Length: 109
Image 1 (cartoon, one colour):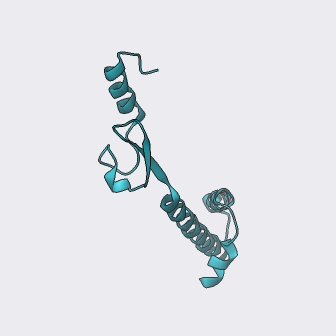
Image 2 (cartoon, one colour; image 1 turned 90 degrees about the vertical axis):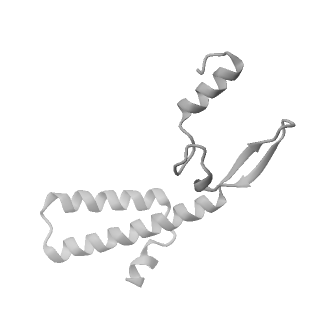
């Protein structure tokens, strides 16, 4: 399996996603022999693992801007567990727009 990981190194996230999509299409046809299907499956898993590694690295580099009371901003590392929505990821746009419109009296769009 170490060979599969090296095979995907150097490829972009987008290239890896395209590769996985291609493998899925090939597997869904049902026209591959068992050995070929297993090879595509294993290659796809390797590509997905590399995608996950790329995403994990990107998440470590993300910073969020926190507004201070004096109007300035402070950059802090992104921590999905500290999300205002209580779930992973940022709060939904609709909730943010509504809160901003309530404060300013303006329409949220």
